[in-house]
Image (cartoon, rainbow, N blue to C red; front, top):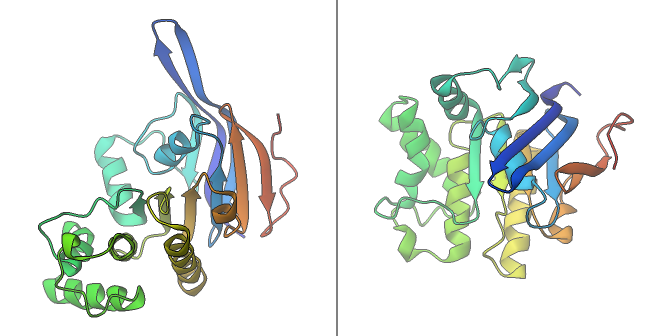
Length: 238
């Protein structure tokens, strides 16, 4: 499959008073279009740092990130903001819903930022909320929804602009096991139905099993890379 993202010799170094710290070092792999990739590793391993760089929220110290052969690491801030608006949806652990907006209005927000017509915003929000099982909750505020329902709204919002890439950072971290499985099944289904590429950071080995590509990071380096979409023989090991 054609790579959606190509990561080459990626590194992130932080400078502290007691010396430099490499959060990521020499990370190289491809993410195929339509993949559901999961990234696992202990706290501090570098997985969230990698996710933030893929979304253009954090700049690498070295190496490069290519989106369909277009370099992201050289874009200025307005260019990165446009990349996120047009191509990326985010699903965060704390949901990040706007508390004074209804479920429908939260889903409409990314479309409003791209200048979509209000009628189209409402139609698509209704369609997405129906798809995530919240067709009857469009006018509810976040505080009127359960935790699991709030995460479903966040997932619907992430898909609002029909992004090429969904970045999910511990999307089940605040949920109990039953709700976690529901959310993972939902992401899995939307990946299969829509062909949207998903990259998910998780500390849970069972959650990681939902991915058809699995990467494990330790001390800022890839130590395992299992790709059922395509055998990758060039993956670095440590």
